[in-house]
Image 1 (spheres, rainbow, N blue to C red):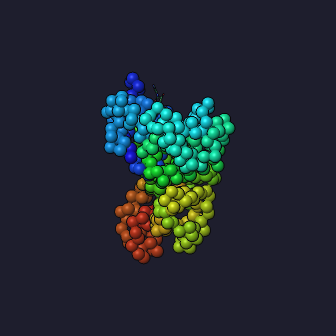
Image 2 (cartoon, rainbow, N blue to C red):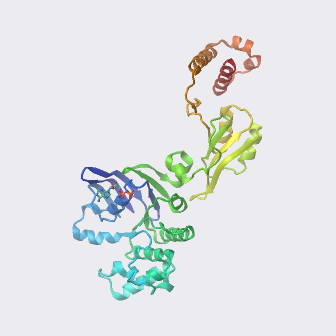
Image 3 (cartoon, rainbow, N blue to C red):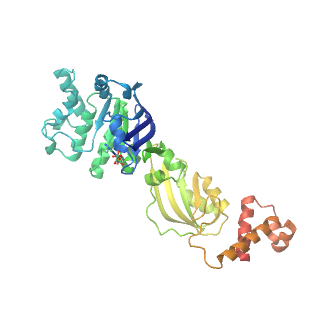
Length: 392
Ligand code: ADP
């Protein structure tokens, strides 16, 4: 496993990594994502010891790599294999010779090297191309060789720096399948640096978002997409383009909070609330834990109390937020305040205050049906708002 603690890297006065912490267990693929300039490559160079961190520690299998002498470092480096972007093989060497390269100057016998190269080529499905040169191989085949080379010294950590960039979707998918297979068979800890969210979604066990040298969000892919509407969550599970967002109370944004949301919720919520529900945009996917993740925009066609709508969705493991309404329940203003609005707002406030303190009997006189039962607080607020609207 690898454990990075308080890793900081400065170039002069520029702090590129600022107290980065993360750990990757054996048999786990941890993705690091972030925009260009966030510090991903610097983090990769610090992990594979091409750069010396300014401070912090990098523990691989319990050994702090930042505290080793130059000689110790050479052997410690074996614990970390690296896979670079595609097409990083040496062109004048065959596939087998490229895989053998990391073993060449170490104290490993010829026969041992030959056996190891064979085993690795077989593992990545490339034994039949052992004597081909990179120019005779497709991009995907070259990256298979790249993976075999990264694993040559039996590392416990595999650093994969944008391993699928430049590959077509089909090849990307086959390389990611291979990466997952190697993780499971060899129990290697994989640090996957990428900017492709599809890659994260399809293969990563956990994800950390690097922003200006700091990790600002992290978690398992499932946790991130189900527990919040954060920037990372929305990037991992983007809502496909639907109609332009309209700030109307009938439009709701939904997010699956549980892996086992019943796909028949549309019908069952509609029945419970006695309303039609129109789906305006949506994405539902099966993610790494085998459960569903979903994000959707719907319109509830019958006017209903917000609390009832929220409760009906919550009972089915779906988080629902009204379009254009802040968490405190206020309606966001889509347009700037118009002339005369201020006075109207004042009148509304007055009406709300009056309703708040109005004795129940007086309210009953005005709205007989309202006094029949003691309404729940959320319902009271709804009614107050309705009264305010009719007063205005
Ligand atoms: P990313 O890989 O996320 O695009 P980098 O790690 O390449 O980010 O770069 C992060 C920041 O560090 C950038 O502002 C970059 O200019 C700066 N940087 C990277 N390497 C050096 C260096 N050797 N000297 C000075 N600044 C550097």
